[in-house]
Figure (cartoon, rainbow, N blue to C red):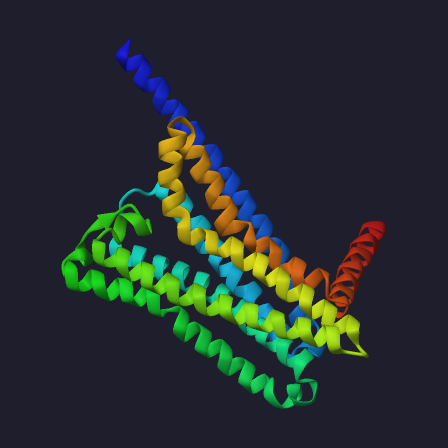
Length: 310
């Protein structure tokens, strides 16, 4: 009887893991397919190449696609590959951490660009050049890699032999020392407070400008709404920083449903914010949307013509 119960429990765990991995993979493929359409539109339309706003936007989309791919891979590996070589695991975790920080920093950069465009329109073309935009993207990648490298260096100091070991590839399993916990708190505080200050400042300045403006109020209102949407997306991204505390709360309040709540929390904090990126610029921006609509319509016409020929 005991062996039968264990077998049934094992089958239930396998079925739950299979369903969750299937949902995560489908979710990831859907998000990257949508974002891939926007990337394709950007590179097919040269009009976007010289606009810093669209360059920052497509950088955010590509970064989110990379993050979704790595995040989904890590989620599947947690079930399917239990003994991952630590060097390979560290590389994946550094990429995941870097891309997550890049999203937050890019949102701040996009808000500053909108602030300059609305509050300092005469200087916008001088300040926000293509060259400076690519320099900003390089700085974002340089700063975004710092937390992951800090964790890696700290792990090397604490356990110099970790290169030869295998582990379940999760950050909580690999970086489980008190030093990593303190380092994570400081890094999270610095990034989140800095980005929120930028968003609040730019929003307030754009709001003041929108009220004072006698002309072109629509542009100011649109920039104001865009920064608000950035704040909403940033809030969802920031939820991933308190995932550990939420999981502890789930374990105390609803221990029977803890695994389901943790899974829903992962979808909400890691994957859902990546759906908002194309909604903010790709759909709301008339120029980008018109180009994307034209490309999709052209593809549909080609498919119809080929089907009629056959």
